[in-house]
Every structure is written in C-alpha cells, then in structure tokens.
Image (cartoon, rainbow, N blue to C red; front, side):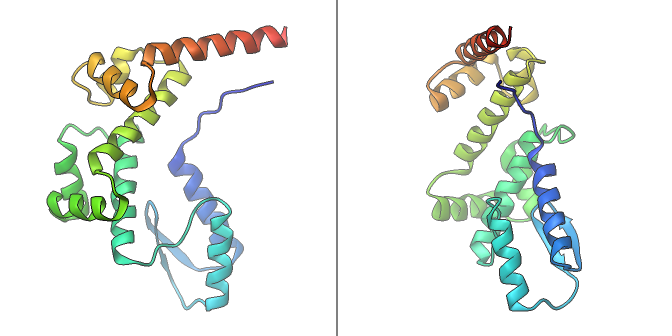
Length: 188
C-alpha cells in the first residue's frame, strides 16, 4: 500500500532537535529556527555525541561564520516560502536583507561563493518543492498556488516548474492522479 504524507519541515526539525537536547540533558533555549543557545557548559564528549545523534537525521552543528550565515539565509528562505503565516508581499531581496540585517549584495555574494549557486536559484527550488507538496495535497488549483507563491501568473510558475523538473505542473498533476488511481485499483 502506498500513502502520501504531508509534513511541516520546521516542526519536524524542531521536534528532533528538542528530543535530542532533552535526551542529552542539555539545558537550552531555542532562539529561532536552526538556532539554539546552550545555557551552561557542555563537555566536548557530550557535544560530540549530540552532534552525531543529530547527523542521523541529516542535521549538523554549524561552526564556520560563513556557513552559519548561509544556513540562516536558507532557513529564512524556507520559512518565507513554506510558512503559511509568512505572507511576503515585498521582494525577497528586501525581505532577506531586513531579516538578516545585511545588505542583499553581501548576502548574495557570500551565498554564491559558498554554495556555487544564487539565492534566486535556491528560492526557485524551494518554491518548486512547495508547489509539488501543494499539488500532492490536491487542495488548491494551479492559479491559487501561483498566487500563494507570489508568481505573476500561472504561466510564470509553469515555466519555472518545467525548467526545474522537466515537466509542467499539469503533467505532474496527471502523473500523481494516475498513480493514485493505480494504487486505489490495487487496494480494491
């Protein structure tokens, strides 16, 4: 049997982080997404075990200043794109600069230098991933999805979707519909 699962990336990460902090009895304060303040001294051994435990989930402690900034940029972008309550009606460059308190030019240069891609490409990738999730949930039309993700039109969304995935959102919808029909026929 095949099922489709919808999940909130931020909630999952926070739960894993919180459970591991409690498991290692680390007094802490979660400052924001991906940012934790330790409220006491932690032995190197405990920190190593904690880090290894997080790595099982694809989570790691970032220590390099540029890497920290890149992670913050990614976190803000993911929050900007995926968060239902974050309704961004300003340009993403302005939003990032305000949230991270650096000029967009600086953020863009550091991001490109470290990741070998642009912030714009990362935003597009996140929007396309969210579009896939929204299509899978089958609750919104493509027009509603385009509006929700601040695209100027469905054509603009379709163009970016096809450039990223190789197929149009409509083709993706048809594939999902066919797979669901096949899965439901196997059950019956």
